[in-house]
Length: 255
Image 1 (cartoon, rainbow, N blue to C red):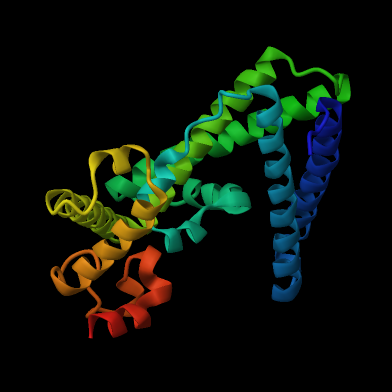
Image 2 (image 1 turned 60 degrees about the vertical axis):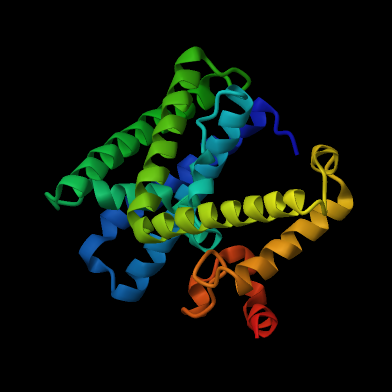
């Protein structure tokens, strides 16, 4: 549903007021709180930040359509790893890393990126807050530029964070993905050589071909290339995501 600019800025103002109030209460009470109350207050602050970040993302869609930072990097990661996507927790994780004292080179680079992101979040929130009070129907260029910079920093932080969480899995995923592409390509090539299909069928995306070649590739992968993309002798969780739901069935076919 399309949100009017004035609605978004008004919503942001209310959400940001809640965030500031929750942060103020948490800081004021400090060590006086018991663990249960502290956890509750932190959860409340986190929820407020999630809401503010969600509205900022909607503002970006309204203010800078077509300029959003590219996030195609997600195709480099396995499907099951995408739960690591920061979403609303981005703010908290960036703050945690920004405060980290780890001097390890890789972590140090992420720490500086997190610091830049947290600083930019504060600046953009301040700009949006002031603009909501001044005129909720207008997005001045200074706010648009802030949103552009914030979007770029968020995308860079997401990529760096997830890459750090899934380095081995990502490398394995790319290798298996390449093996799978090669398997399907070789299967189509063999079918062409044998005269089972022709170039016109491939060019026209013949429906029969779209069903037959993947099936032939699966059988070929199971019977002729058991150590390739369709290897089943390892742990079930290591099976390529596309075939994981059919792990037992594929083992039956291979036998």
